[in-house]
Image 1: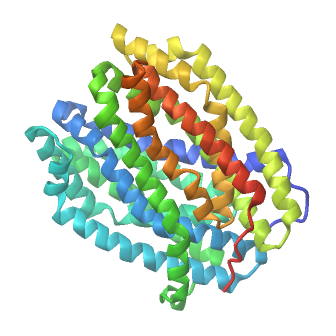
Image 2: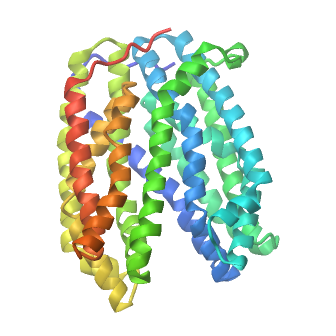
Length: 441
């Protein structure tokens, strides 16, 4: 049974020991999209375009699932720090029931509306048909995806980041093996990619549930929903809204600012966002997850001294990770972006993206850390108001800098930089003055 934290000062090494497995877990989670994209390439361009186009739908689904996962994490961390096993069982039981209910309703809507959703993406007929098939099969096999965020969130809250990483390794390897089997050997086409995702996650979720029962002593009666579920959703709602609005902000940037600049800028965003930041963001998120876990558990133990120690130790790591990422973006821009395109115009735009975003990577690290600590302590509304509005602000600001001032694609990247500066400063100001909510039954 997990019994909280040892009464010792929080060091940089302790934070890092929790952070690196969480970072690897995010990197492996992101690999699912890469594996699917790679596996369907022999089905044709329409299949590849369909998988890419469904990214926004998957983010929207994750936002719905985080209603429970993001709310259960802070409560489970508090319970762990307070060594209150009954409290933690109620959080986990209510969380599992809530995730199943939300997941079942969401997947039913996805399955019944797969063709309509694909049509809303504005795709060509051939691509739309492939996207609808992919979403339908995801609805059929996607129930494990509704539980995975909750299981990961609870384990991280308990400080079990290596267990999360192990489950992600199993799911990723299985996905890589099952994709070609279902797509080509069983001739399921693009639906096989969705089925492989659901089944590989299903194995990891099943193992995770076994460990969760062992670690928490979960009982059948804990699954009966009560007022705790409403509390979980109220804490998780700002995080879910923030995730949804983040996706909306990038959709707006693509539709109204980036796409009018031409396909080269579109490709540059894909290279920079998915390839470059796809490796740096897991570092920042892993650090934020570790700090959130420690913060929640120390708050549960009513130890504000160690909360402050956690923030100071994590800040040194954020400075190191952010500075390293900025240097890689600036000095490695030419070589790294050349790995993903040999088109001169795309390469030029991707280099511009990397070098301009180098000016904000250290701020992204501090933004992620401050947001993670606030959310880990249950102050999710404070994190939302210093994040979501400024993500939406990127759309008009990018339009103004790009078209009105004539900065071209640089205007988009500077809009991202400038809003990142404000978000990072605001979140740290909020963290400095926060009054932690009392999360007790």
